[in-house]
Amino acid sequence: MSWIRSRGRRTARRLAVVDGYRFTAGVRHRFTLEHGDLDTAAVALVQSAARQWFRLAARHPAAHPAMPSVVVDDLWREMVRDARDYAEFCDAAFGRLLPRPPEPGSDRPARLATTFRLAREDENGALPLLFRIDRELRVPGGGHYLADCGGGRDVCHEMPGATCLKHITGVKGARRWPSRFESTSIPPGTGGFGP
Image (cartoon, rainbow, N blue to C red; front, top):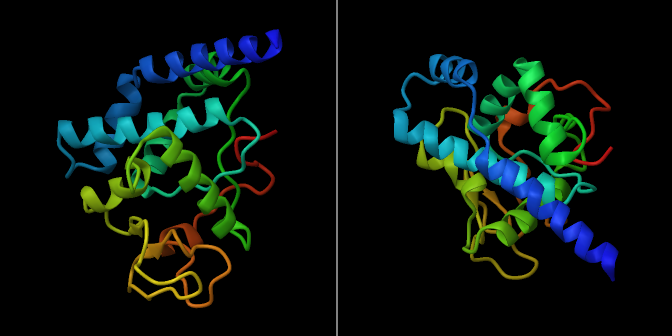
């Protein structure tokens, strides 16, 4: 029983690190150069979505999620470029370096469904920030997700340009992932949150 309390305290400490993290000036600068159309409030919203992603990692270190947001992925990429700061953040928040997700593959729908389930645990509501941020900010090539397309258990109503998260796995006709991630080149074997 004491190991459960200890694990809970460790998770709470890690969540506090994630929620209190301040993105470095270099990360913010490079990110805003790449996304010059985003104002200060929009950049702050992206940072909040990135924190949601990192909270999932802090709570579920063995999970193998998929990154649903193009703009959050861009911010994360800029964080990784500041290797020393990123390593210090990861050590405090996760106890190890958090690798970037693997290349999209046949398991992406299941990993995206996992991310959706974990994000809904983090944020009450139909569609967590991590899944709606690209559309809210009108990010070119960004993800567009629906929590539910309105179809029945075995029927996904095709919504051009959108991914139905209710039917993401195992339903013929369900769109599987945003096209930008199909061509993303991430070194193989880098894993998800897990080792």
